[in-house]
Length: 355
Image (cartoon, rainbow, N blue to C red; front, side):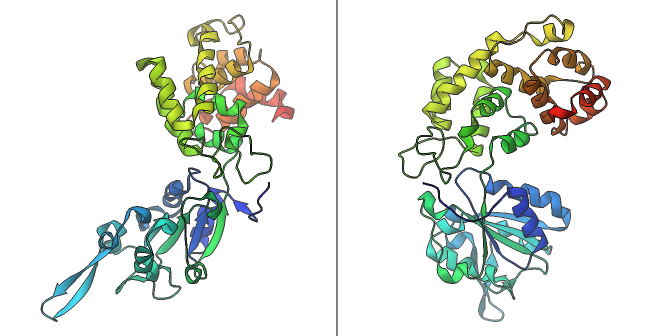
């Protein structure tokens, strides 16, 4: 069954909304593990050092973690002392992320509620510095993970649904964030691993989060990053430990299939042989091995090895050549190598129709 939640936006679009319309309180809803908590990194890049930044995990907090009354003996009154984690003491405008707000106990939600006011935004009797920004995150109500927000709170926020990235979007992120080539290759070959249960026809998808199924682990952008940590250290652990760790991170079905991609490593020529003899070095024979080699080449290529690598890649099917070109162009640490390479430039001119 397809569930229609209306329009979805990307994490980058959500960050632009928050920055562009600071007077609104945005509530970002999305499936578990899609990267909602990472949006603070995008906000820092957009807003810079003129702001203080406060990440506040509401689901793990109690009232004493937010603020405490302290006596003013001279005036014989109590004053409100906010937790330093909220960064109100800095004097700067502050960007406050109330993560997992909908999982917080009702008293915690009530105590944080003054931060959501349109005017006189405050925590207790401590006003936020002018220009401060507050936003919330939560899971979808259909995720079945206990998210509850009262109606009067919802009327104070602008609720938007953040989409789960598809495989192409995730790969664009992965090439910039040191994800192991084996994991990227697996996602390239199994794009359904980043489908959403809210889409039609996903009832039998063994990889994804499904609130109707009993699951201990599943594939998400977050768990793929964790699986990369495991795969990248596979030389130091036993095969049994690798299987157990992957199963406990991305689920048994994904772990079993990803191990096949690890085995593809045995089919690949060495990097030295590719660079020394690009016209005669062995080519991988399966799609999975091609994917592992392509993403591994992006990670390894240098200015000195770009020309022989391009000579080698020109022996691949056009699909794989295009995959290399598109993904290296997205990688900030590698794109300068590509764009200053005459071999890459010549390939681009001759293969515009592939891009």
